[in-house]
Length: 112
Image (cartoon, rainbow, N blue to C red; front, side):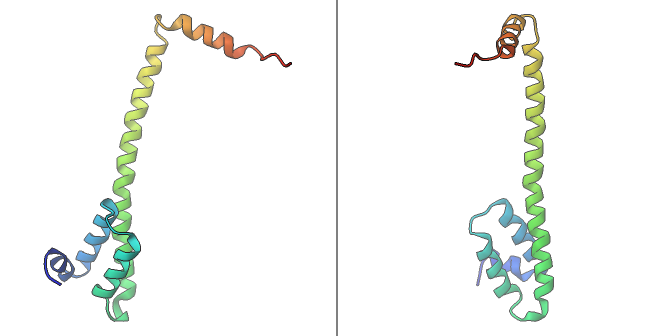
């Protein structure tokens, strides 16, 4: 194995951590294939398997936290935007429309 992947795996468990983190951010292959590959190359014997599992779980969790932070930032931006839209709806320009909508929504539907 040559190239950048072998250099990353050559750095030991830190390389495994980096691969697990980056795989969660840029998911090119399925995760189970990456974990199988890491298990075959980084821990061919069973002596380091528990440590390898712990490191890959930590790296994968860090990659997931990246996406969590991205979604939290987008949600914060959407909340800001929706609060500004609702502030615009309560302005005097939209007040008659809003009162008609409240009146229509408050009326019971006739049952036939």
